[in-house]
Length: 187
Image (cartoon, rainbow, N blue to C red; front, side):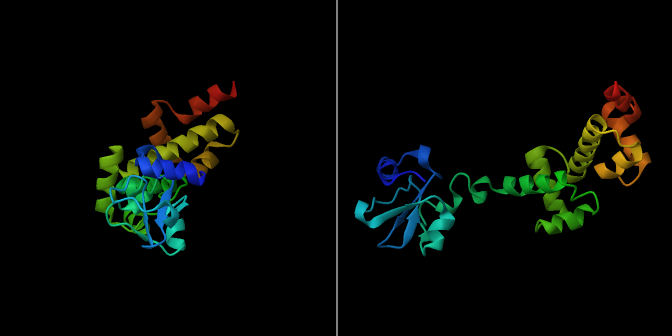
């Protein structure tokens, strides 16, 4: 957390560079704001600074209705639906879509499958299924390059249900079978 004087100077200037870096809590009104809030500036004696909106709320302050500090930069609300897609991609990269269907996966995120697909198209230009397929192929490629595991084990560790599906998808993606890539990495 920055020191009080630095935060106070940024608040008085309404410096956008500090937006999301700290929050100003007004002791007299029990409201917290962003440094860029258009509301009249409170007296310096009546304020405290906190590093996050959550810290302000933990101390009993409520968000300002003018500057909406809960939507400050670096907060999930500020990123909007992109936050949901980023979370979905983290889960997909960890294999969450390898053992379930898109509908169940979307439910886990609190959405329907159609909405999740729309968000993926909007932010990534693809579908959740294609993203999962790509993640599986990338995991398989890493395993091919970095291990001496047999092909069947690589296929299952990468998230494929069968060796046949692994070979098909790998050939579609790399235009060569995985055995050819495995031979090259062993040289």
